[in-house]
Image (cartoon, rainbow, N blue to C red):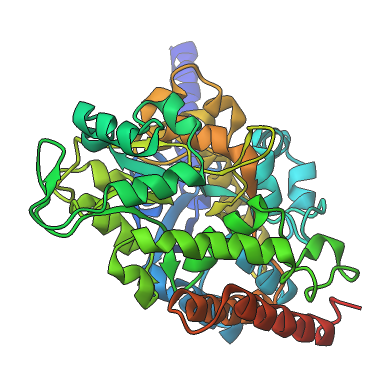
Length: 476
């Protein structure tokens, strides 16, 4: 009897102890809220939804991710106002790459080297991240070994085209008869498309309302081509830089400060030639191109509403184009490489300005919040989450995911995105970027709207940057 009582007592004590352990675990779990600022669009909405459905903190804490979704036109101003006000509202931020220098030097974005050095998973992520994203999204000073961010959404520009028009036998024959070349339809044909053919496409598909177009007639005045020509944010710059680089021109190179100059570089003959090439092709775009309002959302709408044959735009804006709720031509839009400048050797240069955003951590977080935020980074950058992101309209930043045999077929723009990554450069990251960009956009707009020549605009840009950067000590 005593023996049985001892067993019962032991069991009771074990159950009681277990109960205490569970209670202790429950008591030790903390509620941690991580507020993240991000642009209000698909890639960040997916992150929030995916987190809410699947994320469980390994620490046992109750971690909640709360997005402040901000419209793109107000995004920089809102984030800058918050970070510089001292309110310490955000624990993480989805930042455009060109902002990072401003907020790093302002003491707002956290350097991550010591955390990466101490964590094999973060080290593996950095090693697997495509070099273009490491360079553009993570490093400051530019091309240094100081790391601040990880890819939240990698992005590149590519060609969107109406395959019902470009693959139409009658249109192809007519194009051949008029220009002696091939109207590109297949991926291989687009891969061989240069700016000369792009100009011919613009001329060829210019139709008046009622003119024959494919198997029907143009419902309205119809245009051949469109790309960014918007005064706001960085719209024009993102496309003009491509032409400048492809022609052998340059923007001010922060990687070579303080020796890098603006005057004589930004406005050199090659840069002027590239900018003029950009301007020359705008004549085949809809009239909105000459108003300074042809931004990424306008050209997205132009092709979705059937008013242009082909555009160059970001992959990040592509999913709505394939949705019949948004697009009149959802089943007819396809994607390919961007055109480029063909050299004397016959090869095509496609240098372009990288898009997309990293996410970063802020400097005022506690150690516990920082570690939970880094766990979110590791979760987001895990292959399974990256693959799911790709299946839902995003792009992975991991080379291992992009190397999967099925990756290019997941979404119709993936193949072009992957091939274009090796052609990506970036605009400046220094704190003076905002003044440089704002003035540059103003000058580009004057040339786009016919108020200045390409050379006059670039001369004004070069002088402004030279003066600004010299005063800031970045040019000697």
